[in-house]
Length: 229
Ligand code: GLU
Image (cartoon, rainbow, N blue to C red; front, side, top):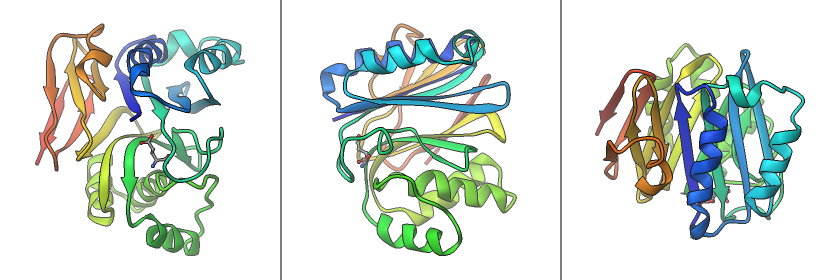
């Protein structure tokens, strides 16, 4: 089992995400990664092996204010199911540097979706099932949908077991999350909100925790969490 953590609305979001990922280490993982929005750019850092490798890479990033300025950040510890253990296959998976997704579980019908997206011009950089998610979000956002609308269209396309968090440069202060057969908790903060695979991964940030149920999706921004069934 692997883990997801996301933080929105905190200046040092990337550091808080790393703290959360440390608390999920007990679940086992083979690689890790983090994506943050800073200065209207998506910064993605990934590494194989233990979290310390990711932390070392993060401390080397040229964007020196990434750690202090980011207010939206998503992170992942991966247990590979589709594709070997590599930096390319580590999450977050991205589409055209605009959308980033972290995902626990398996997208069962990914091959069909992937072939269709390739025929539409999307370029895949990993062997994962997960990479269809950022490309689908990107496609639906480009068609004029907001993040919630895009997420709902993605949910209509996919089958499988999942808990995922999606972020888009076009909506830097929002996260779309959904779960089906994989756990996901949302933490409520003050002008900030949090997501984690379990309550422990975000209990350094808040004690107010909501568990999503199977089939739920949610739109999260700085002030608000809207949950839909
Ligand atoms: N199926 C995805 C992959 O192989 C997610 C695995 C996981 O749950 O960590 O990348």
